[in-house]
Length: 185
Image 1 (cartoon, rainbow, N blue to C red):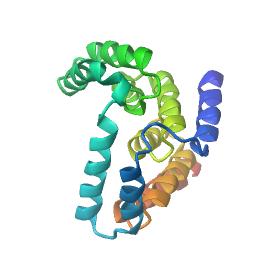
Image 2: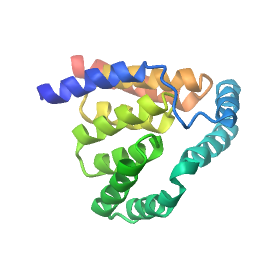
Image 3: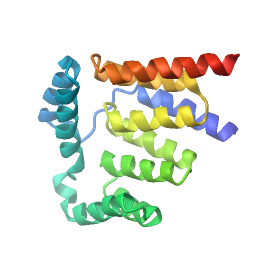
Image 4: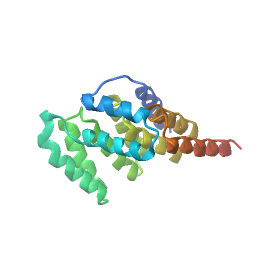
């Protein structure tokens, strides 16, 4: 459990990093500005989809890995988690600066119930792309699953910084606050 706590502490420190990644295409900055400004849930979802499409693309120097990454995504979607881990690990080994491979492997580890490995990959995702709302959502889910409600709330507040008008995040924070209160009683 101590190892788990150390990972969480390191992860939270990493979340506050201002590191830049190869995923910071000029289009992404504009999309994140639009995400911050939008107060329409449909529009927020559309902007997120556009951001995902950029994150999904491997850097130019790693394009030959796209098919391996795609196979990992397919394996993840069809419930072949071990195959997905293998595919994403191959991409990470060859293109360690590609944040989305780390994020997808983190998701796979989460599905396998391996929270420690998931946390390590989330940390790397956020080092490479501190605005990665998917990784932050996954982090919040791990904290909620492990009944660390205050940390889940802190993570949701980071999401709210990216999308200050997203009422779904506000509702999730309220639900987590209720769980935190119940856990103290």
